[in-house]
Image (tube, rainbow, N blue to C red; front, side, top):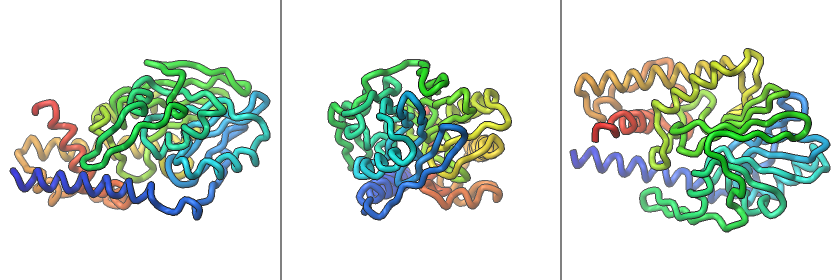
Length: 299
């Protein structure tokens, strides 16, 4: 039992180290790529989470803002799309690769997020031995929601809807209603196992439920901006949902059969999902996450 606990601790520290290494890299070498999603909606890719952009006569609205050292390049990319003023920043959740630019952009725009995002950005967060400092006040959301709100901006209603206990406890998905585009934040990783932050209220079964609800709401021709990965379709999201269901079922069946976590790792997951472990979250870590999420209720 002690050996298993130690392995979990070291796996967690390894994941934390990977995040920290990403934050510490040379941002000057990363360029911002802009992709037209549909109409006046764009996606910016750089280092960190994908940024959604709405441009038009009312100015500019962005969804997430990556890391602070990327802010000037993000600003330059926005100017290439529209000369208007940045009016709003919407945060899909609290993680630094999506909110790191808040202290920069918050000085010139209004930041909006779920109430739990503000709470976490205001205070110190701990991940094992790593301490994540609170953001300065300029980076805190000044408008918060509990369930949903709407912005009427650039000729359409932009709906911000909270989906609880998925990736974190503060996840919001952003619906650009006229353009038929949705930004899903880190509730959606493209053909990669997701990072479910159990320490921040995330839950694997909650994530499955949220994705199922989203799929039921989306039209067939929707364009989806994921938290990480390329611009996607409804079919991509359905495949992701099937992965979540099947890998979780595999782990649940093994737990019911009395298998240990080490045995689960040795058993692995269905062959179809083997390549999904090549991303930020390797297969062993995804198995651990499912196991911890499913067994937490009984502990």
